[in-house]
Image 1 (cartoon, rainbow, N blue to C red):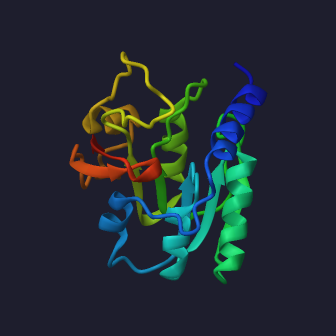
Image 2 (cartoon, rainbow, N blue to C red):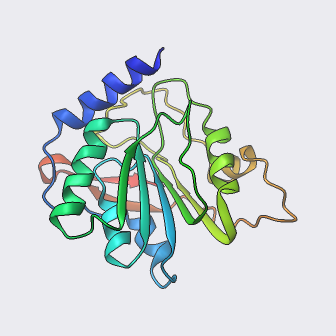
Length: 199
């Protein structure tokens, strides 16, 4: 499938969702980043922008990337409205073809899943190499399918965290896996619907 198909699909996903007034940050981001000194962050697949806005409110300078121009434009608008426009740079990138420039103290990739061709391991490996020494790569995947997910494939495979880490093929002499878990939580979806999910 082409880049045009992927852009059309993801623009459609975000256009069909009402823009939240106050997008929430992901739980695993808050757990991991609280207490870290702010620096430069890269948010891959920024979606509605809850993570980027949360980071910016804590003094991080955030490059927020999504394949969807709808998502990027909404986030840029939220950032301006909340006085965070100078800390959030929301841009459209198709990570198959381009990657944001810069060096980062944190790269966050929450739920970077797509039905389109994407060499995810290569993208995440590139993200790791965009980190400054001492930086952190936070990868959070779906370990289950929420009832409101765009992907309701009953045969969907959810790789274990250790498998995701191994696929990155990072040199263990330089890189350390600090956390590789599959915790459960109660998630809230559209209309306030809740379900237990695995991250």
